[in-house]
Image (cartoon, rainbow, N blue to C red; front, top):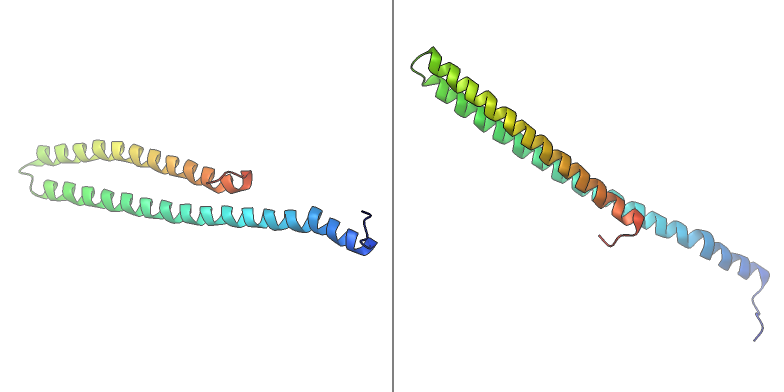
Length: 117
């Protein structure tokens, strides 16, 4: 059977197939990637708020303990313990945020790569 399409219709079909449809698909992938970034940003913000809240609770607990101290050496011990624990806590929190950033990046890139995430 012979192709009976007019040249203009053939050109339109070719443009749709080679330009319009790929552009639509790319737009959908970019939109999905943006959605993943927004979700990840919200998740990271909540994590940082949770960490700040934990740090504030720990700081107030240390201040209460220092206020109840009987002498300067006890105050110094409370302060030293707090600083040591806060250092450990800060490293843990930084690791958690780093892992979350990596996950957000992977999730955001997945739609662009064609992953099914």
